[in-house]
Image: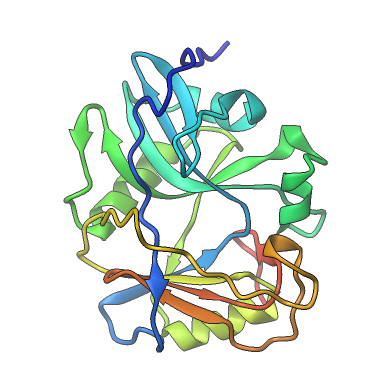
Length: 234
């Protein structure tokens, strides 16, 4: 049985990197792009204390997500801190926020991992993005279905965004190669809302949403409420 950490307010918590608004897509070979998955932001921490799944506000919700905890427990590392998004997919492999929020399939909720902040006591936040992503990919090999890597794409941001829209994705996140993990706890992640209402329950019609930026990272939010799982094509 994986060992969960005992309750401790904000124990091991690091403020997540949150982007703020910008007015244009990033362009050029220094940028890569990721699908923006519609779920709950979580950081998976494993250390001598145990396993914690920390929300944006530092609350531990590990007991709610057993599949993620099991995968973190299987990692070949003494300690780690992984940044990602907890999601739940439908039968088409699309993440649906309502399924996560209302826990329709709690045993199937997994973490889309997109960054690695610490490994075996080494702080990786000052390492280049591509180094952190490569280390994360290696770490996740053979860990089980509770942790899945968010792959990045080197195509232009506008191209990736249009494909994301065709797949009814929430949007894209664009990151500058060579950038460190920047902590901006005051920054806000703005999401465009479609006619279906707030958050992941909205549905849109392919219009451009809000583009957000924090210096090294953009998020482009589409007026729809689902994100594709890795491997789908349009």
